[in-house]
Length: 112
Length: 112
Image 1 (cartoon, chains in turn blue, brown):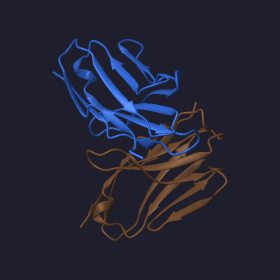
Image 2 (image 1 turned 90 degrees about the horizontal axis):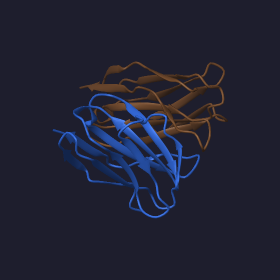
Image 3 (image 1 turned 120 degrees about the vertical axis):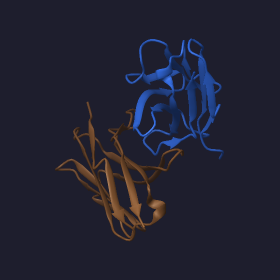
C-alpha cells in the first residue's frame, strides 16, 4: 500500500495564477480531507469529501477555492488567482469511515 | 459545534522526565480521540487513539486517558527522549461522517 500521495510536493506560483493540488488517497479509502498549515501553526480544516460528494466545506474560503473528488482519479484542491497569503503547506488525509486519518506528505505552495 | 482546546501550547521537559498534554472537548457526543505527532517538516502521524468505551490505553512509553464526565483527555509520555521533540495534536470526532476537530497543538521540547 503506497499510502496517501500528494503532488506536486512543491509548487511555486505568481500572484494571479492558478494552483492545482492533487491527492490520491490510500487504496480502499473513500474519505478525503484537506488541511492548510501555516509555519509554526496548527492544522486548519478546509474541506471533507467522499467520492463525488462534498460533505463539509465549512473551512474553505467561499471565493477562489474549490475541491473535488471524482469517481475516478485523485482529489483536486484548486486555488484560483492566488495571493501571497495562500502560501502554506496543504495536507491531504484519507480514511475509511470511522478510523484513523492517514496524511500525505503535503504540498508546499509558495506564491511570489 | 465541537470545540477542542489543547494545553499547554509549549512544553519543555528534561530528557527522561514525563510529559503530559491535555485536551478538553465540548460535544459530549464525541467518541473518538486520536493523538498525532508532527515532526518538523513532516506530515502528522497517528501515535495513539482512544474510543469512548475505554478509559485508558497504553503503548510502550505513551498512554492516553479519557474522562468522559469531565470531557477531557490527556497524552502521557514517560521517559522522554530527544526523538519525542515534535508538535503534538489532539482531536475529537463524533462519528464516521464527521470531520475531526483539532486542538491547536503543543510544541514539546526535550532538553538534554
